[in-house]
Amino acid sequence: MVSPLFVFTDGTQGYTMCGRYMIVSSGEELRRRFQVRESAGVERYNAAPLQMLPVVRREENENRIALLRWGLTPSWATEDFGGRIINARAETVHERPSFRHLLRHRRCLVPATGFYEWLKHPNGRFPFRFSLRDEALFSMAALWDEWYNPTTGEILQSFAIITVPANALVARIHDRMPALLSRESESLWLDINAPLADVLLCLRPYPAEAMVCTPASRRLNNPRYDDASVLTPEEIPPLP
Image (tube, rainbow, N blue to C red; front, side, top):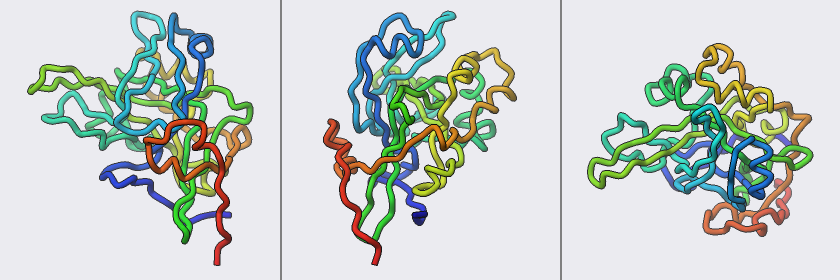
């Protein structure tokens, strides 16, 4: 069933899709998958904006994992944006002041095992999880930056996930989706010396036939619920 579009707000100004995702992986799996020297395991069933979450960056000719806040505050900001910028649209990322410099110099990957979108329904909003058919780790294209807090003297590193038009599967729930990268595109995305025209070609809808969609629990509406219980599907009442 094709639903009316639902824009995820979670009660906070500026929150758009993608607004929740899942990353459940052992440290060994992350090390193998992203060719990093070391990594701790991660078990986040309900990763949400303002949380510190793992990203993969290219540093000194090797991939490294770091914890950054989801919700971008650009280096030029006069104050912390408070996590309002969680997404960047692929179609305009090379034009927007908040992103165009980062697109050239500060690209990263966000490891994930699923992301969520919500179906708008007369009885409320019902979440669905999108993942790869084999439930494998994948990566979402993202941009990062660091901001100096003049009050505390601390450095905040934060990121935003890039979105693209939805593929046929995701479009049943929402008109946009995160920019999932193929394995071949990941190295190119992390290579800051790659031609920008080639980098932008990485940002396209992931093949729908390689993905699956499963209903989840409305406990996802609250980021305090961050365990496997959020994957338990709820029955969606029939439309009147």
